[in-house]
Amino acid sequence: MRVIVIGGTGHVGTYLAPRLVEAGHQVVVLSREQRQPYQPHGAWNAVERVGIDRLAEEGAGTFGARVAALKPDAVIDMICFTPQSARHLVEALRGRVQHFLHCGTIWVHGHSVEVPTTESQPRRPFGEYGVQKAAIEAYLLDQARRHGFPATILHPGHIVGQGWAPLNPGGHFNPEVFARLARGEELALPNLGLETVHHVHADDVAQAFMQAIANWNQAVGESFHVVSPAALTLRGYAEAVAGWFGQPARLRFLPWEEWRTAVAAGDAEMTWDHIAHSPNCSIAKARRLLAYNPRYSSLQAVHESVDWLIEHGVVQV
Ligand SMILES: NC(=O)c1ccc[n+]([C@@H]2O[C@H](COP(=O)([O-])OP(=O)(O)OC[C@H]3O[C@@H](n4cnc5c(N)ncnc54)[C@H](OP(=O)(O)O)[C@@H]3O)[C@@H](O)[C@H]2O)c1
Image (tube, rainbow, N blue to C red; front, side):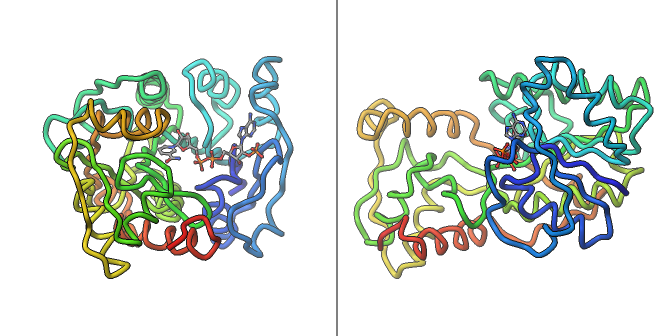
């Protein structure tokens, strides 16, 4: 197929575009061409690159027509954040694509009730990002089920890979947390450290997109969580990271109100967003319908990423 990936040079696109090429698809990647994929891969020589600023084109009302003019069989939309944006594209592609795949987020769920959370649980998102993504999901599922638009929605967890800092055991992105654990220094965690995070390796997200394309009849009109096989508690995550460096985890636990004043305001804000959600999502549906089979556990994905941070001097151990 001729597959257009909108925003295809980022975390997921780095792995997805080469997978699509290797599967024999004709691949077109749209981006502003401000950045390169995180990892080099020879398959990029076979990828057609088109420089487009989506927001500028949407403002001019021309984005959908530009994508349609590329004559796609399938479109993978990695960077859609509002229902208006989704609607604009769907209107332009209606009747013109075999498959439309949207990258969502597990933030379409608010806090969990029963865990692992399944896709069928009622959506109670909070925060602008999750609320907008849940509205996009509802719109696309309605378009698929009522109007036959061939949409699939994949909801990744915290995306991990070589080249950027993963969500750390403190629930934020400051790589110093890994350095402290590696050096055996004390680390304070909020509450009892039992709130959860749910990572996924970027290549496993790419795998899920491939599996959705390959299992069209199971994927259309459905949404799927795309995470590792199991979420982590902050405490267990911290202990595992310290263990990689032969250190005991020297952890201290502080009530949230105390903890948040002990770290940078930006880090505290990030942690609040993660622990207020405390995701723990099921991949049973993706396993059953798409044969999604993640290669990485959360800890394996993070370990690979932290090794990269150490090799590149970001984390000093
Ligand atoms: N990161 C996470 O942990 C996480 C977790 C759950 C869900 N998600 C979802 O994952 C998706 C993002 O995927 P990602 O993390 O692989 O992306 P990413 O790393 O943020 O990369 C974004 C891609 O889009 C391009 N881009 C950005 N703005 C653009 C614009 N205005 N016009 C055209 N291209 C543009 C970028 O290239 P240029 O800069 O060169 O244009 C790049 O190719 C989002 O839908 C997000 O909600 C992410």
